[in-house]
Every structure is written in structure tokens, then in C-alpha cells.
Length: 491
Image 1 (tube, rainbow, N blue to C red):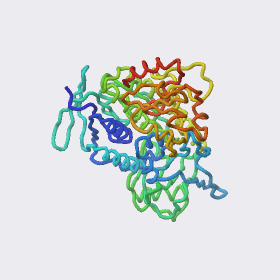
Image 2: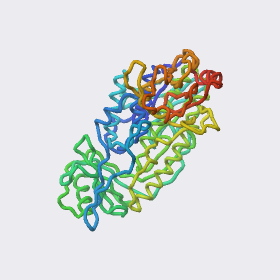
Image 3: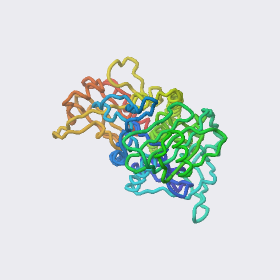
Image 4: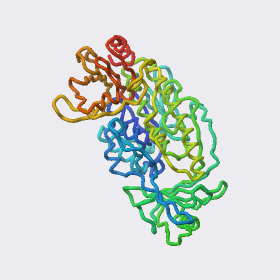
């Protein structure tokens, strides 16, 4: 017997995302964190378009957008005067990709909005709760926790370590965390500052050891200060020390740091855990991968780890076969490896004064074509392919009200999207599956489903709970569809 289904260790973005997903699936869990209070800093401030789609599904996107804004223009101070340019060059939104720009939201605000959503679902993180040990067996994990009220022993089906780059869970599992330091030491600080407009991301001495930038944190009266600093030197992170650094590097005596609300000096690393799982203990977020900040990939990759893991844990706890959960590492570890490579390339580019960002940072093109949960269709030459992100599309319900595919997908269920034909032919009722048929209960009035999915009459696409296409087929594959759904626990 177990007291709980899951214990999540670490209440950062990954842990909170996982908790929200488990809460809406009625999975019994606890979310603990050894810190006495929530993280106070802005560190992971970029929310990429794919993560915006995740947050929409979790019911928190609008509040996160309202807590920040789009990235401001960069104002580069050169010998010839200031030059203003956009932070990224991306196209406008499209029907299949409704979010196109990264949002700038300080991490403490993002996590606050996630905690609020979790509270709506009846849960809250438990701070000042430190995991001191665990033992696992084939039936569960016994966890020891030091709490303000004393030591506690809890039994759970699974333990998830979402406890950051210094993860105690990963270390206890003796999972290697190989990688490299990237030869860059930097400081990051949230400051109140006099002397600058909050309408620009101000940058001086780009690509040099005297580089310094001040980025407004929209929704607050703070700037995020970033600057490389030498190795082996104590950095004065006080208001006076940071004022001196800013004035020295900008040659601006009118700039004054009035207050420092959070600050850190750190070495940039790129690391990837050798494994994401040992038995009933799993890793997510920074516990599994550590990124340099370039390109705003770390927090986003962590959130999407949790989004991938949540439905799989719930499925296996509900009776789905073990391979469903085994697919977590098989899907997410290659993604982290690719994203680490991207972050390193962007760091090298930034050191050569190139801070432009393109589609590669949006994470919209990431997918799982090689996953064991993906049913390959080698001869498909149009529309979506299994493993792709499921596109959005504006549609009209049969009753005449406009809606979107993302609205139909929203929630913890699988979705079978059929095209034309007899709606009863696609699938009988199954718990955890919703069936929509274009041309019956959903009308493709603008042709956007046709353009995005490329389905012919009688064809269908099966969309996973995390918004990826698991399979595409026609009437002849409906028997295989039934077997597939049985195999992922949708019975």
C-alpha cells in the first residue's frame, strides 16, 4: 500500500507544471521543496511559443501574459550612437501557430501564476520540506522528509526529482551528470535602477568582457542586470557594488542601482543526465539537464518535461502498461540533448555580437517521430505526420459558435480528429478519449484544418494529451487504432 501516487521534490517551474497536470487528473500527490520560500528571482524570463501552448492547455496562459509582455527592442550603445533593433525576427501568427513571439515574464511571476492555478485545483507546495532519503522496491518508494514539525516517512508509487541542477534525487540515484563548463562566468541580478527608460533592453560593449545589459522586467519596476565577470574574483552584488560595475562599463554616472532584490554569480554549464529514471524514481527539469541562458531554452524545456511526464504517470497509475512511462526518457532526453546544442551555439554567437533569434528557439518544431508511442506512416506526403506537434486551427461548431482545435484538445484527454464519413465509424466511447469529426460536429469553414492536417474523407489523426500526433490513418487502420488505444490505457 502507498499513501500517495506521486511525490514531487522541487517546486520550481517543472514541479509546479507536473503538479497542475496531476491535479487535474485526480492523481494523489505532494509537492515539496527544501527552500523556506518560493524562488524570488527572474532567472528564466523567456516563455517560448510552444510553452505558451502548454500553459494555455493548463489554463494559466492569459494570466502569465498579463504578468509580463513581449521582449522589447534592444538598444545597442555603439561608438556611433545607440542602435535599436528587434530581439527576434519571426513571422506573424498563423491559424496553425497562434503564438509566435517569446514572452518576457520574470520567473518569479511565472511560478506565482502556476501556484495560483495549482491552488484553484486544491493543492499547494510545501516549503521547508527537505527530502533526506528514499528507498524503492518494485511496488513503490519510501521517502523520508524533514519538515518544520519533524521527520516524516511517506510511501508513494513514484518519486519525481524536479529539484534543480544540484538535484539530491539524482545524486542519490548515482546518475551521472556529464557535460562541461563553458568558460563563462556571469552575474544576474534583479535591480531597481534610476536613469534608464524601461522601453528598451539596453546593451553596452556587446561580446566583450565589459559587456553589460539591463532588461526591463515588464509587470514590475525592475530591470534584470546581466554581465560577464572574471573567474576567481569576489563579485560585490550589493546596490553600491552593482552601481559601480554599471557606471564603469557604461561610462554613465547618471545610472544608479537603488535596490537589489535578488542576485547571483554563476558559471555557465551544459550538462545532461545519463538517465532520466531508475525504477520508480524519475528526473525532470534542471535535475536532468543544465543549460546556458542563451536562447531562453532551460525553463521551457523543463516545463515540457513535466507536461510529457504528467499524463504518462497518470496513465500507468490508472492501469496503462509500463512502456507508456518508459517512453518519457526515450522522448525527452534526445530533446534536451538537441536543445543543449542549440543553447551552446547561441552562446558562441552572442560572444560574437550576434544576439538574433529565429524560429529555432520557439520549440514549435520539436516532436517525437522516433518514439515507441508514435505509429510511423512512411508513405504520408501531406499534412501532419505522426510525432509532429498537433497544429491549431479555427473551426466552427455545428451549433454555429466559432472555436479552435486547441480548445477541443484542452484538458487531460486524448482526441481523435476524424474527417467526413460516418462519425460512429471512427471509435466507440472510451474513457479519456474525445472524438470530433470535421464535417459533422466541427465545420472547417476556413479550410484551416485541411491545410494543417491534410486529412482526406474517412481519415483521422489521434492527438495525445500533450498535443502531439500519435497516429494518422484511414478506415483500414481503425482496427489498429483500437489496439493502440488499449495499449496506452484508453479503454
